[in-house]
Image 1 (cartoon, rainbow, N blue to C red):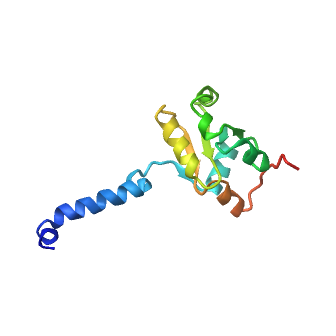
Image 2: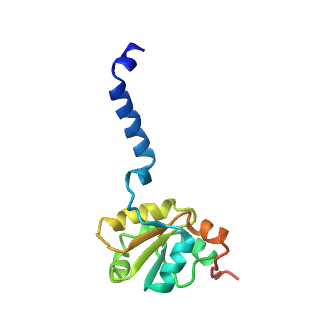
Length: 137
């Protein structure tokens, strides 16, 4: 217990480091995470490419209009489909935002200037009553 009080600065630094590891969004303010309504405005104002990183079956069950499907595990193999559109806004999304965050990190390493993700993914999109296309019907 004496150690904690004598090294309060060190303990604080460890705690802050731990928080930043678990919440990377706090660390990076320019993550380019947009709400679904912001994405709608962006799509309507500028050329955009929507990339759904969910499985093909999930994509067919429902996806955002004009989205293409490149599952997360295929991103590196199909990278040319994305980089060939690098002048457009590239918006990656998944169901909840977890896989799209991984895709964002992979694509961000390529230096794509207009790269975004949808906060909360397709679930947030649907929660805001925005339209999707269902191919399974």
